[in-house]
Image 1 (cartoon, rainbow, N blue to C red):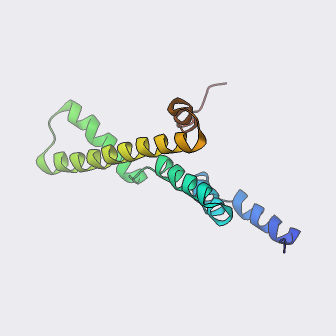
Image 2: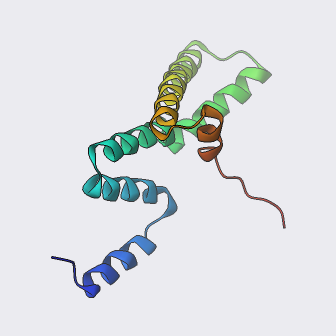
Image 3: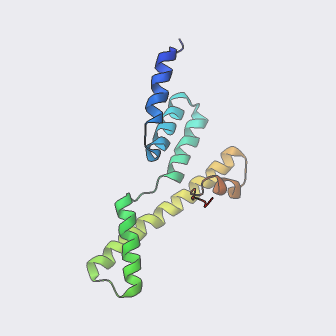
Length: 126
């Protein structure tokens, strides 16, 4: 049984009100609801590729520690914090690359194409 138009309109309205950073989660959830096993696997790979393991606060802290470390030596707790954050990013980078390779195989395309599809979008000056 197909959902009524009112339910679809409500779903669309809810999605339109979501912040941009939540849209990836919503799309992945919807894909998983309707996906074949192959598409569900693709959605999982996309999740690994797109979800940074660090929170925004942790990312800002890592940038701060990197910048400060360039100016002068960090104290030991700060140094350990930076190493921990760097290790998390490095592990994610390896997982991300592995997921991109698998996704390229699933889509029967090359890694460069997948890499271009998942590059962060930057604002351009008009």
